[in-house]
Length: 417
Image (tube, rainbow, N blue to C red; front, side, top):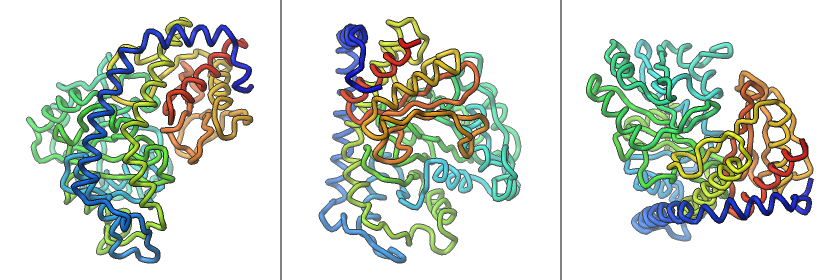
């Protein structure tokens, strides 16, 4: 399939969908404008200069750009400290470093939004051989399921956090591979309040992947002690080639830095090898880029509504992450949807995505991702586990125009059924 093969009826459907979305697009642009102001303020306050773009090699001592980026992230997220590093291989790596900062052997970490995302389960010790996991080092783990509506169960969270030994609490902001709503900032604030009421000494961490800049506030603005995420998602703006970040209380960030490198070294080392410019420019663009991804998701939701296909959130709902779920109901329809997204990509558009045993996942996963940066989720992609009810998880779109074309390609592919 090629862009030139989009069906005329799909263009007509797209025009109808877009015509109804002007108000929603204005709302998304308003959030992007305020978040851009916040980012610009941090860049100016932290005195970003040409000298910050220079990279270091070897040990990476006295890296002006690296230290400035850390301060900018801390200011944007309203925290004491931040750790932004190319040495984090992905968001899971940053999250795992954060988890190890929350508790000591003999203490417990409590997940209060159900079982965490697939790739984090091995780090906890729920899957895999357990070597090097939280449980391997004697850190206990428990979880509280979401309620019947897929939202945090505040009474159950309060009861679980009251038990002896609970030192860390983790929330997953996005839906991951679950068919449930993303957590709004207001919901995160209510969970923080519930935990503080019964266990004021517990550290609260939020997996912030896919959520950055979708709202005017971040989890750390409403009391979370630590957040973590990936630079090839929202905050990298489509330019960061790799990396992850943590932001929060200094003691927790320092502990995570010691986990990333080694005790005694922490965040003082780590050559940047020329990525500082891309980290800074990507962050500068991030609020706008996230808005493009949100518009793409909203457009997809409206297209699915017009086609009578179940998807979530609806076009009119407030967004707390960039993910759009499309419930396709069969393995073949999931494959066709992903084929269309792949065919609408600027890179590897000729490739046919197939399910495979992706490292860290329990089921085979199909992934459409024709990205400039491998695995980048802020660029248009769609993926999903090959299990019922066969949901595609769409995210990203560096520009709304290209994201719209990708969704139209997916619809064209499905109409081949």
